[in-house]
Image: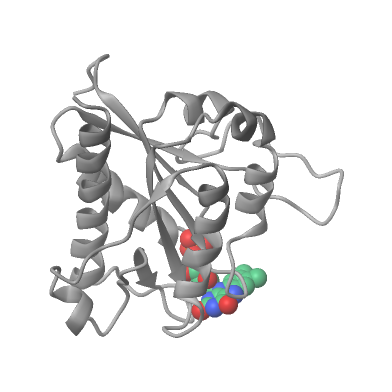
Length: 203
Ligand SMILES: Cc1cc2nc3c(=O)[nH]c(=O)nc-3n(C[C@H](O)[C@H](O)[C@H](O)COP(=O)(O)O)c2cc1C
């Protein structure tokens, strides 16, 4: 139940085929398990090498497009993208390239953040993608966090899940279900983000 006084935790993701979206929803579940926190799920439009291509004003399905106001209003941020050649997707990078005014204003400075990704192959660059998403967050002054090894799944997982952030191995056809380890770690990351947002807000 959304209360006007609750802290907003922005869960911002890009997902072409739905794998990263599943992680976003699990992180949102972890966020909402913390009293006083609401998850706000937002996405970004696709980009094209054809400059004339434009996206509809609102997505055809799923989360609404993010607006710069969301950066100002949030008390924390979870950022997710599928892995594209070991890096975040261009659509997400394009969004960050349009945030210079918020960088100058310090809209995100001092707020906690975490990252998540999905890959087709297990060793296809999950951690490099997570690191690539941390970089703009550091420039924005965010307090970037991962997960500690007190979560035993980090030691035993044979699917995704990393101390750098939540991950999912979607398989070559993109049809692997989110594993129990991936699920537990994604929920735990969302919960950790929200708990720290509450502490930092002094609420
Ligand atoms: C252009 C492109 C580049 C990709 N690069 C990688 C890669 O470097 N490593 C990998 O494991 N998977 C790679 N993939 C696969 C996606 O990361 C994977 O299918 C992901 O789970 C898709 O997430 P989504 O369902 O949220 O769109 C790539 C896919 C595309 C389209």
